Image 1 (cartoon, one colour):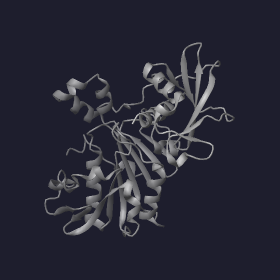
Image 2 (cartoon, rainbow, N blue to C red; image 1 turned 90 degrees about the horizontal axis):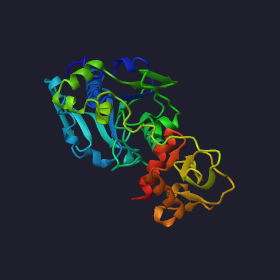
Image 3 (cartoon, rainbow, N blue to C red; image 1 turned 30 degrees about the vertical axis):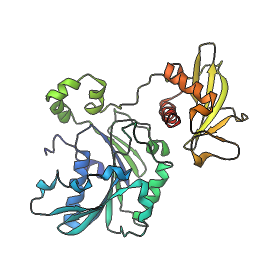
Length: 331
C-alpha cells in the first residue's frame, strides 16, 4: 500500500485530540490505516483496540478483518474468533456493534487506547441512525474509558453529508476548503489526496465516473447528499400548519398558497396543539404519536409536497432531517 497515495492519520493524531473525525475519498484507505495503526500499537505496547460499527449485521464477515493487511506483518499470526481479534495468540481487540454495546459493561477494556468507528455517517437508505445515537456512543465510550484520558476515537466516513447526528450534536461546521477543523478536544479532517484522485481517474472505472455526481463523491470528496436543491427561506406570507418532534428537535411546517409551497422550518407556533412525535421516546401527553403518514392528512400533505417538488427547507440540516422523517413515515 503506497503511503503517498493512501490516507495516513499521523498528522491528524499529532493534534492530540480525543475525538478525531476523518471524512475522505471512498477507497482512500481510511479503514486500512486504522488497522495498521492499532496493529503497530499492539505489537509495540500491547495496547488494545475496538472496531465499532452501528449494527451486528455489519459484522457478518468479521473473521476476515485482518485479511487485507496481514501481508504487511508476515512474522505475526492474525485470527478472529467471534468478536475477538487475536495477534500472536493474544487478545488485541474487539468488534463491537453500537446497537448492543451497553451489554458489554462487564468486559474489561482497560487496555483499549483506540476506537475506530467505521462509517459513522450512514451511506444507505436501508439502515438508519440509532435513536439518540450520540448518547448511546458516549455511554459506550464511558464504559471503555472510565476515568482514563487516553482513549482516542477515529470516526471514519466517506463524504456523504455534513449533516449527521455527531456534527449536529457538537455544532461542528466543516468546509471542503479547510483540511482541519478543531473545536476543543474534537478535530475533523477533510481528506483530499491529489495523488489518490489522479490514480483513481487513471483507471477505466475512474474515467467512467469522472464528471458524474458519483465521481464527485467517491473521488473528489464532495458531499453526496449536500445539494442545495429546495433549500429556501420561508415566505413572509406562510401560514403555520403543524409541527413534528424528531430527535429532540421540533420542526414547523408552513404553507403559502400564494406560491403553492410548503416550508419546513425550525420556527413554529408554540400555541398550536397539532404536534406529532415520530418515535416513542418523544411521545408525551401533549404530543400525538404518528408512525405512519396515512394516519395524518397533514403529514400526507407534507410528503406529497416533497415528492411533487413543492416542499422547501430553510437550511440543509432541516432538509436532511425531514427526508429522514419522511422515510420513517413511509416504512
